Length: 292
Ligand code: PDD
Image (cartoon, rainbow, N blue to C red; front, top):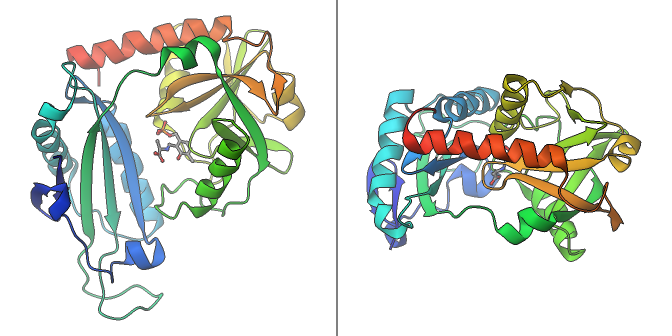
């Protein structure tokens, strides 16, 4: 049975209950993070905590913990669930902060309410080799979401509906298009490769600034691979030699079929192979404790 953290206590998941008046439940009024941990070491924790702070600022909620407190909570949680993970102790942490529970349902912010803080962790495995050897299918859809997609809000109904349309069409991800431009996936960021250049949309309120995305850009720069943050038109997406999607849970996945048409050569491309090599080396250095 896994242990979770809820409002100051480490308890069995079955015992973790919140009041039905919680604003996360009633309004989706909260934010979250997903943080992988390799060998029990949290991957890019400082980047995730900075994004958490930005999300909390975005919804005008005070951060209930300092970075040091967050690290202590999450490290303890990982230790509690170590026995459930494989020998390599790879786990993924989910953490959520909501505006708490007020007596009366009212859209406006309640006064003197304590935020609800929840965190859980689950074992993770390396991406399925079948996926990385063949790549995955994606579809394009209109981005129907709101104008603050840089906030990692728990209010994910549009993302859920978009992802399900992809699944219904046997695809792993929906790549979202707004005003003719590629934005991101329903739960991932998007890269394209054209003539050896790695391209990804620039950050802005229309997309979530992915931690994996930032690392891919860092690795490209460090290894002097040509890369650019720029607008990507829908046409450019369709003409790409390679398409990748990135996220904390999926790492870097090659998309080899887009809207039922082959991408590039129809198999994971050479630039992806180079990048996933750099990424795996980096991941190993986190496991060894020589990188964050
Ligand atoms: N989602 N864009 C969206 C809309 C996302 O939901 C995610 C991640 C990303 C990638 O961000 P990162 O590299 O920091 O994981 C981009 C997480 C994994 C989730 O909702 O489960």
